[in-house]
Length: 164
Length: 268
Image 1 (cartoon, rainbow over the protein chains, first blue to last red):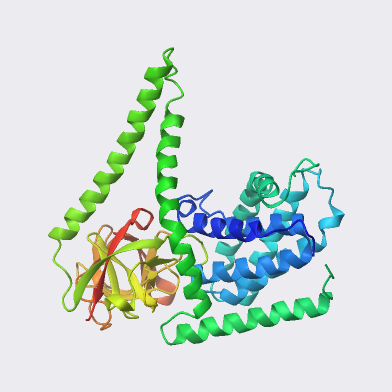
Image 2: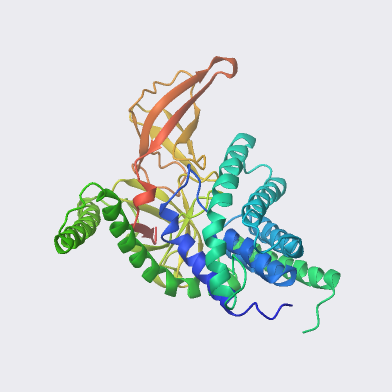
């Protein structure tokens, strides 16, 4: 595992979940909630690699599932897959590439949404799922930039690249 | 540090995931919460209240700053004072809303049976996949699964799981929510959540007299929800002649986005 990832990522997760369940819960972007814990999973995976990304994704997914009160397995698995996969892709993206986080966020949101649909097909109508996924992909691809910027500063030591 | 072997590491994580998920659902079946879930909420609880207060303060300030655009005066001190007063005003408006809500609760006739206890919302309805909230009351205060949650405006939902210190409430707007209901003209049916702001009333008699604006109440037939709690009002009624089906779309009486304090009927 990479040494630069520290206890601070877990503090970031706690803050993200706490923010999501309080202040952010009052806001919707184009009718959909922003999923801050998922964005931190994407960011941690890109910054810290697949081992930490997968573990972080699993814990973030479980916490999200506990809060939602349903689809706990689907949330945990989808975040684990997103954290592991994006972490494995970490070396393929230059840390200076400003398009990497939005592209990864769009892919991650679509993938986790698909896993939720596949694991709980009767719980969502296809129309609602498609609309919600489309809106979420767009909003998370935009919002990942400030989140990733903050995470790079909060999680990692001072830096040499655009995002760190 | 030695890197873990990928297949073993992934297998361990998947195993851990399966164990925790199974533990969660086993606890849920008994109306409780698993130890990791309880611990997570206990840790979160310490952070949520301060964040909510600070977040609201920043929201008030942010709103003030956004609306201030056209009022850039030359005097820095006066500008700051105006912004500060507007911030205070926003907070006072919010307090007035809370106050109005509490006054209505005091004046409200509580539903029959049991005792109503007030509860703060600790975890708001934060995700789109399910509509649930968490309250700061639990089995220590006598809350049990299936207890009814309401405010002065009407029905909020039903308790689905309880720990000693908190409980989870399934909101009326959740897709899994079902409530036996009757309109003010006597049409009986079942109000179902849709996951969106508007619910629907199904299993209505095709010839029932249902009109736009009709108030919808709990029918009291389910033995869980007491009779006469307001659910909402009819937005639209749609007759599907092909299936001889009448469906009414219901706007909930409760503003779920503005909830801060609710009542739980315990001991019913």
